[in-house]
Length: 265
Image (cartoon, rainbow, N blue to C red; front, side, top):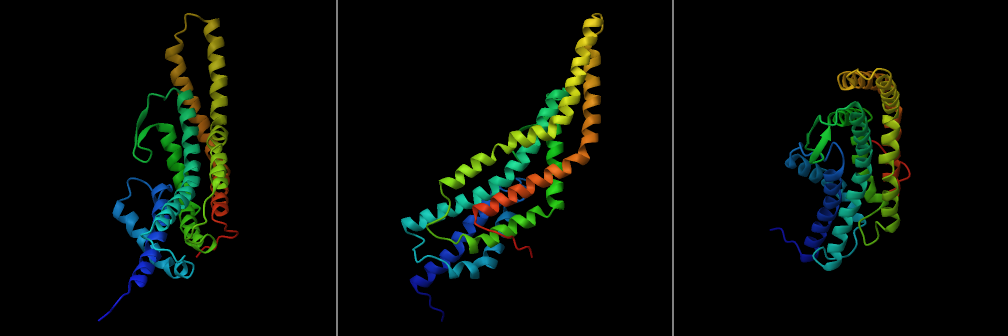
């Protein structure tokens, strides 16, 4: 008959619960992995499988704290914060791309072409959704999802489960990283915005020269056509910007968990 003492049971729970909370928080917030269309069973199954794999590493550095105590609950919340912080970094990359699509769609006159986006649980512009899909495909092509999973697995060695973890500097870093939403969003949308600005100026001059011209009948198809044409021409130049955004996000995630070099399997 197998007998387990109370201390062994607490150690077993700590080895499983604390790492699972960090991994689940990452999967819930990270793009692609945290997509609402992904079944919850798949997310939980992936988190449990990763927890079982990293358990031998975690067990060596576990603090001698009762998981059911108040301090154990604080450690649980801290692991959740670490996972959320890591996933939030990469989420900002996708929000920046979708913001670029929103700006382009508004200038093209497609502000009315919106639909419900289950990933963000809100309304989104059709161009923003299109660029979001392009960013997702580029993220998968760069093996970004595998890098994120490797990073969270390696984080238990560089940032072990314990009382020390995220601090005010981590939150300040995340807040500063939020400026990428506006900077990169404007950078991605600037070619189309510039072309549409020139088009609107030309239409304004044309309206002054020929007041009898119905500008609404001419302006909308013209701005829509020019916007789509310039967007198609700009697509090849989006790849370096997306690549820089993804790797900058990965470097920031590595800095949060004190990783100097990411070991890919």
